[in-house]
Length: 227
Ligand code: SF4
Image 1 (cartoon, protein in one colour):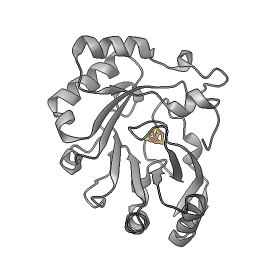
Image 2: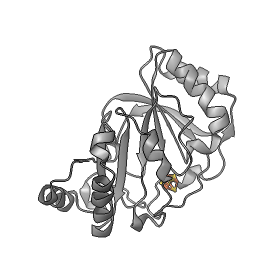
Image 3: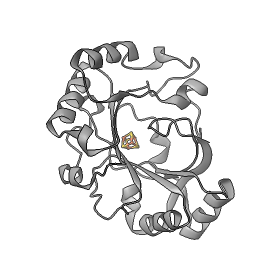
Image 4: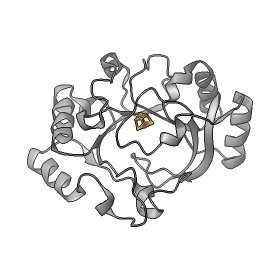
């Protein structure tokens, strides 16, 4: 597997936010979201065997707990990744898989919590979600929309309602995008969409979703990596 980094931090943007988590960040992505804060994963990294990744995860979190598989787009390395995920599940780890849903998810083990980041129009990657993946969502999964303006909000609201997402998954998350060059201030002035405005829109429309903030960007400098 090509790996950008493996580190321990707090999970920042799901219903698991605030919990200690080991992140396995895979290299490579087939999308180019305009606000992407993970461009450093597009290239480079280092080749690691599944055993080396396993050894690092168990060193950082020997007693089990949360492991998030992220990227980049981790499903681009599905062939090597899925056996490792099965191994982690069998050992009792709770595995989160962050994916855009552009790749088919049918082979992802049922025990994995999929956090599917459906791309909105202003990301520049609209219509990349593989619609058949809706049928792969289970009651413990989560669907996330990263929003940078009103058009994104309306897309997410309508998608949520049209596909009855709240009945399919554990949580639907609406999250304001951060500026990708954000640095210094650890507050919502760095968001492309004001969380207060988003909250008011969600309340006005009674959207069955929760507003999510990227917790780690309020704890550490938004430009900091490996947190
Ligand atoms: S899918 Fe994720 S890693 Fe890929 S460009 Fe979009 S935000 Fe960045």
